[in-house]
Length: 584
Image: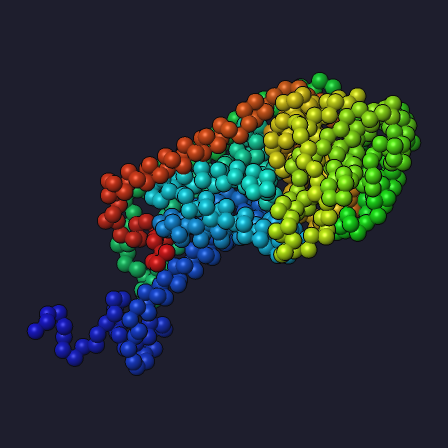
C-alpha cells in the first residue's frame, strides 16, 4: 500500500491544481487530463518571451540615445536592462538576447541603408546585430558578468569599427554621448572609451537596482504558479552579504564612470590657440534624396558657385582665409587638370584671396574613379590634394562585385573608388589641415593620423544629399564633435545640402546650417598644436584593458563554479534576470 495518498482524493499537479482542472482562471474546471509537460512548456515560452522582449527593448533604448533622437541619458538604463537580462542565461540564450538587442539598436540606427537597397540594408542590420550576439555570448556568467559585460561590448565596438569591409561605426552608442557630459572622455581614448563608459554605467545601474530589490519585486509579477499563486516567499529572500556585494559593485562601477568623466574633462585638450582663422563652409542647397547618377554634375557645381558669391561682397578684412566646399561637388567626366572647373576654382581663390578647398571626383578608366580633396591657394594654384582612404562599401565601391551582382542591382555604383593613402594632412597657405572625407569622420583613427602628422585644424567635406532623412547627417555631426574632442582640434564641415558646421575643440557646435538650405556658415576657429592622450596612445590601452577584464570575468566565473558557490541558492535568490531559461 502506497503512503501519502488519500483514497478517492483527486490527483494534483506540482503547483497544487487538480490534474483535471485547467491552470487558467481559478474556479474554471474542465474534464479530461492535463497533457504531461504542458505547464513546463508554458513556463518556458513565458521566460523566452521575457528574454526576447527585454533584450529588444534594451536595444530600442540605445537607439533612442543616438541621433537623430539623441536622448543621451537613455543609453545607461538601456545598457542596464541588457546586462541584467543576460544574468543566469546559458550561452545560447545570451547570444539570442544580444542579437535581439542588436536588432533593437540597428533597425532604427541603420535604417537609412534600406533606402539604397532593401535587401542589402536588411543584411547589414542583421550582420551588425550578430556583433552584439557575439558580445553577449562571451559575457561571463555569475560574478564575472560585472566586469566581462563592458569588456565584451567594448571589444565588439572596436571590431565593428574595423571589420568587415573596413568597418561600420554608424549607429554606435558613443554617438549619443557627443551631446552629453561624458563626451570629454573621448580625449582619453576616442569614441571607444565613451562606449566603454556607457556599458560600465549600465552595470552600475543594474547592480544598484538589484541591490535595492528591484529584480525581486519584478519577480512577483512574473513568477507565478499554475493557478496564479505567487511563488513562495522563501524564494525572494536574499542573503545580506549578497545584497551588499551588489551594492559594492554598483558603487565601484559608478565611481569608474565618474572618474572617467572627470579625467576626460581635465585631460589635455589640444592646448591654447596658436592662431585664429576666419573660415566659411559653403552649402549650395537643393533637394535631398537624389542619387549622384540621377543628377547633372553641373547643378551641384553651379549651386556652390552661387552660394559662394556673397563672400565676394564682404569687406576684405571680413573675408574668410579658408573656404570649404563639400565632397564631390566637382564631378568631372575627365581629368581635373586643364578642365573648365579647375580654371573657375582658380579664379575664385584669386578673387577671394583665400585658400579654397573642394571635393573632386574624376574617372580613371571605365571602372574606377578618384574621390579627392583639392586645395587652391590664394594665387590660384593647386597647393595640396588628399585622396579618400576609407571608402563606403556598396556606396563608393562594391567588394566582390562579381559575386554581389547576382543578388542586387549595382547600377548605382558603376565605378569603384580607388583607395587613397597617407594620413590626410594637407599643407595649405591657411595652415596644415587634417582632411576626413565624409564617411571617414566616423573613424577616429583618420583624425588621429592627420593630427599626429601636424594638422592644426580638421576639415570634413561631406555629401549626405542622397539621404532623405536627418538620420545620417545628425549622426555625422555627432561623429565630428567626438573627433574634435578626441584630437583637441577645431573642425569645419561642409555638405551640399547639410548639415554644415563649425565645431570647437571641446565639441561645441559654434554654428550650423539647416537641411536643404543654400547657406554660408561663417565664423572664427582656432588652430592648435597640443596633443590629447588619445592622440598619443590611441585606442590600444582601452582595448588591452577590456581584454584583460574579459579574461578576469571568466576566471571569476570558473572560480565560482569550482568552489560550488551558490549551488544551493533557491532560484528566486538570483533574481529574474539570473534565472536559467529552460531549454536555452
